[in-house]
Structures are given as C-alpha cells and as structure tokens.
Image (cartoon, rainbow, N blue to C red):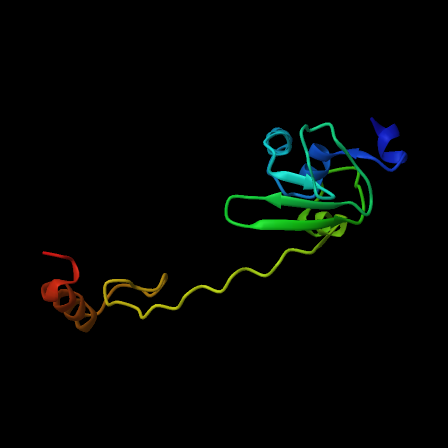
Length: 133
C-alpha cells in the first residue's frame, strides 16, 4: 500500500479519512460509493478511485457542499491542524441566514433562567394567541 502513496496516488476513501472529512474509514467508503463525491467534475463510483495532488473534490454533505483541492496525500490520520495541510478549501461561503425578529418564547442559548419580567412577557405572548390556543 505504501507504494501507491510514493507513486503520487492514494485511494479516495483513505484520503477523505486522512483529511478528516469523515470520522471513520468505513464512512469514507460509504460516502465515496454513494455518489455524493465528484473528482474533477466526474462522479466517483467506488472507494478505490485514485486521487492525486492537484485534483479537486466536490463533496455533498448533509448541510453543505465542500470543494477541496488536494495539496498533499498524507500517510496517516493525524491531528486536525495536520489534516488541514492536505487540502485547500475552495468551498463557496454559506448562504446568509434570514434574520427574523425574536419572539419572547425563544431565548438565546446560554441566556440563563428567565426573569420574572421575561416570564410575564412569555405568558402575555401565549395568551394573545401566539400558540394557537
């Protein structure tokens, strides 16, 4: 197996695992075989597909699309800072989220317990038909 890395090629599932795109090698194999990965605009059909330095991967994940240019193949799954050296992230920026005015019933995470005033506002919100009662 070390011979292929020395020749400048590596299996796509190993590279996805080394680059920490997936948590395990078996998940990398499933991702590659699922058809959600493109290598230089061509759909990847199997986990044994070979990647080289300079290839561009487009990966459709659950909530985002990653576009990665391979800068190095790597030879182990190291810590995250080491994994980031394996690729250049060309992903488009995430779409801006629509700002909605906050309702009294929704509180920010970590805001603590509601005060007496907050509880009164929440009760008033629900009494005015905010919950559909």
